[in-house]
Length: 264
Image 1: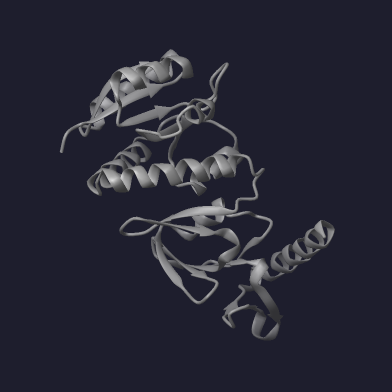
Image 2: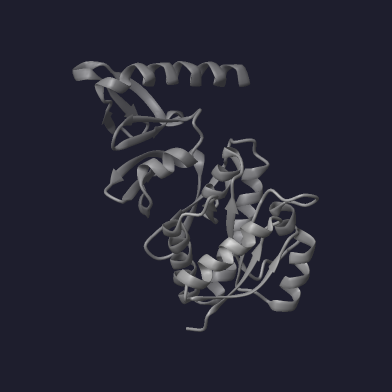
C-alpha cells in the first residue's frame, strides 16, 4: 500500500514541529508532505498537495479548524483533530467518529488513529468517500446542537452504522466491545467500551445504572425496587441497578422528567 500523504495544520510552530517529528519517527505508514499555520494556508496546500489525511488543530485565530472543514462540500481527505479544545467539541467529534488526539500528544493515541486510517483505506475509495460525507454531516450537526446530539456513528468490525440517539434503548458492556440495543429489537455489537459511549451520549437522558449497563431514560417504563432495584425498559428488558447507583438513578430520573415537563 502506498504511503498516506499527510498535512499538518497548527498555528503554533512548536506544535507543528512536534507532530511532524512523531509522525516521522513512529508512523512509517505516513509521509508528511506539508504543514500550515492557518486555515487559509491549509486550503491552498490541500489544492497543491492533495493530502490523504489532515492533522488539524481546532483553536486557531481568524478561522478555526471547523471553519476550514466547512469550506469543502466534498472532503477529499480524512481528518484527525489534534486539540486541547472544549469538552462539547470533543463530544461532537467522538459522536461523529472523527479521530482526535488531545494535546499533549500521547503516542499510543496517535498510533491508534493511524491504524484506523489504514483500515479505512483498505476498504476502498467508495467506502472512504461515503464515510467522510457522513462524518462531516454529523459532526457539523452535533457541533450546532449545543450538546443534544440526534445521531451518532457506531463503528463495527466491518464498517459503521449511523443511528438516531432516540432509538437507542440501552447499551451493555462486552469486554472491549459494546452491545447496543435498539428500538425494534435489533442489537449491534460495536467497537469501543461502554465508558466511551457514556462520555459521548447526552448525559441528561442516558444513565449508568451498573458497571455493565447504560440506559436511555426515554425508554424506561418502570422501576422495580425488589432485590435492590431494576429498570424495566420499553422492550420488556429488566436490567439490574447496582445498589450504590440507585440513589443517583432515581435523582437522574426525577431531573429528566422535570426537564421533559418544562419543555412541553
